[in-house]
Structure formats: C-alpha cells, structure tokens
Length: 260
Image (tube, rainbow, N blue to C red; front, side):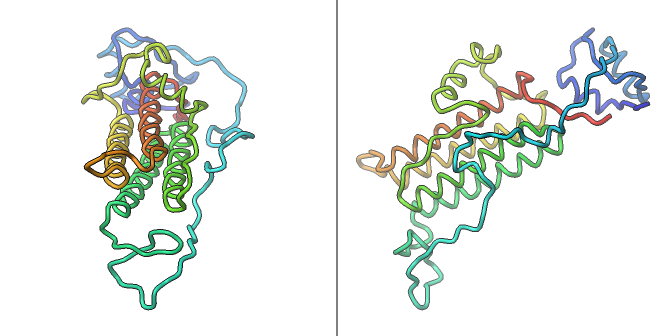
C-alpha cells in the first residue's frame, strides 16, 4: 500500500481549503506529517475509483498537423564566406557577411538564445514536478524560439505560432479574456503560488525583454518604425503563449503524473 507524505499531498492539491475532498489511491496510508496536515485543514479523504490503464503521459499524441518548425533542435549549419582570418570581435550576420558582436541585431540573437535556454530549463523543472503536458508545450515554445532566430538570420518571415491547440488569434483572445476562456481572472503570482508558476512568470518576463531588444535592433530611433514587424509580432505572441501556459496551470487544466 502506498504511503503518502505531506509534500505529496501539497503537490496534489496545491491550494488547500478547509474541508476540501482529496482523492487518494485505494488503501493508501499517510505519514505522520501528512496526518497532521489533513487534520489542520479538515480534509476529507476519498479513495480514487479504479480506471483502465492509459498510455504513459510522457508519450505525446501523434500530431499530423504540427508546424514544420516544431521539431527537436539540431546543429545550425550556416554557410558563410569567411574572411581569413576571422576577427575575434565579429560573428556571422548572414550567409554573406560578418558584423561586430555587440551590434543590436546580434545582441537580440544572444537574448533569444537565453530565452530558448530558459524555456528548456523550465521544461526540465516541469518534468521534475511530474507535469509532462506542460513540459511538452514548453518544448514547442523552445522550438519556436529557434524558428524566430532562423527567420531573422535568413531574412524570411517568421512562421505563425501554435501551442496547446491554439493559433495566434485564439492565444490573443484567451490571454486577453482568461475568465471567459478558462474561468479564472488575470494572474498576479504571489508567495503562495507553486514554484512552476513563478518559473513561467519569469520566462514571460524574459520574452518581453527580448521583444525590447528586437525593437532596439529593428525599430531604432528616431522613426521607431519596425523594419521586421513579423518578428516583433512573433515575440509578442510568444509572450502570450507563455502567459497562456500560466493560465492553464493555475486553472488546473494541465495533467499531473503522480507517483505515490
């Protein structure tokens, strides 16, 4: 019979309320601290109903219409006409030219590398917290970071974002009207919220910083008119996508994989 600890109970219910019902596996026992927690909140313990086995949640469903950019990363081989020798303070601007590493356009790429790395880190934290569905959505957003950088480097239009079954228009609608879409108000993460929500909130803040770096690179003063409006839009929608994952998590719409 499984023994449930206080930490596992807290992970299950996240926000305890006095007298709430908590489902546990049949025959489950509780550690002393878990019993104290149950008494403190007056929790009502009910046994879960047996359900037929389902496929492991780490195995994502086949997606016939996944965007071409939503794929694992690979080493980005970028042909370039290299000067001999290449100055240490320069890097590839495109397939034909080098540029100083500290110009706004290259700074923007560096920021996008950081955002992609952070997205993958948050996905790793999601897997550690047994949130495989959230981790898969974050994998998609990491792939979209690579799509943004690829489009910028190759001077092509950024593809439209898709995540968690939503396209650009649906993402914008859901994040502007979360009560209508998910039944919860806009989020203001606080000290009682789960660690994952804070990771997501930090990721969103970094995406918004990347948007500012893109404006510095592609909408400089005095005109402030973007030369790459598609790229600015892509970053704005990427921020919306991260916020949507925050909303899904807070609304309890993302599956947990609990091992007791």
